[in-house]
Length: 67
Image (tube, rainbow, N blue to C red; front, top):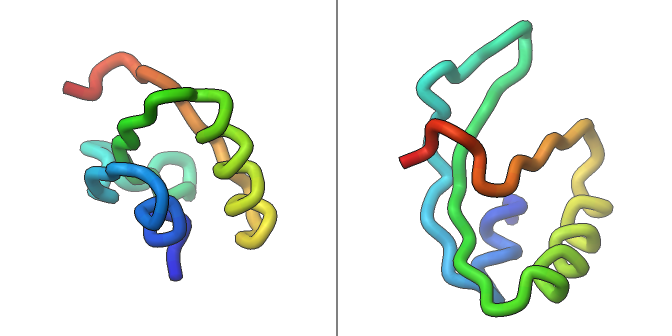
């Protein structure tokens, strides 16, 4: 399962889709949208999921330019 697949079990998600600038400085970028009622519980669940998947993650909340 991917990160988004694990989050889909508990949250309403849309995506992932490729970022308009998909590869930047050798790194790949994707968008996905998660609709949550309480951000605190989502962040706890996200931290648990990201511990499973090794690597470097950057997460932007309400990033500019995503419409």
